[in-house]
Amino acid sequence: MRIPEHDEKQGLYEDAELRIRGLIAGEPDRIARMAGIVAILHGLMPHYYWTGFYRVLGDGLVIGPYQGTVGCGRIAKGRGVCGVAWATGETQVVPDVHAFPGHIACDAASESEIVVPVRDTAGEIVAVFDVDSTLAAAFDDVDRTGLEAIFVAWGE
Ligand code: SME
Image (cartoon, rainbow, N blue to C red; front, top):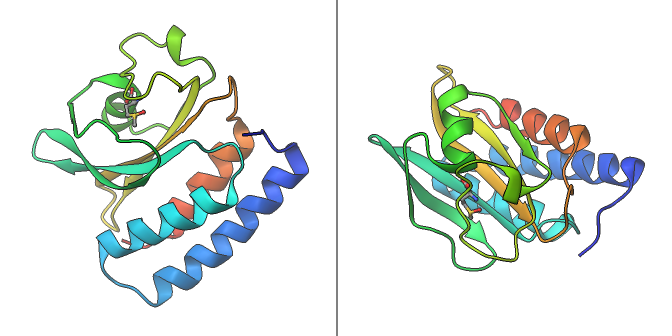
């Protein structure tokens, strides 16, 4: 596990976005898109340890496609980093998960995290995309910008 430096990280997100646009163009099903997006990003990014979606279902979040160790299945509204991203509609960049009040530790190896809200074409949040790293402060504005661009473009 390593954190790519700025230019390398930016290049990886450009590569990921191109691949994901190709995937989306050929696949209308939401779960199939999520599965492909996870595989592309998890395979490309050397600082990703756990990569996956939590889907909005009723008044909670339910796990979707992911790669990594076994994730928590359900997250109640407003709980953890994922719940805050959903409730606020804002990307959460957490350099130290131990300092985040209410962080949910599904895997004790996680040190830092980013969670990006995922919207449908009507602007409703339908899921959050969650990445954990075993390295502290693995995520920054390059990750935020790169992931937000992907989820603006995902078209669902
Ligand atoms: N840490 C997250 C929960 C999901 S796991 O990281 C897979 C949170 O606090 O929302």
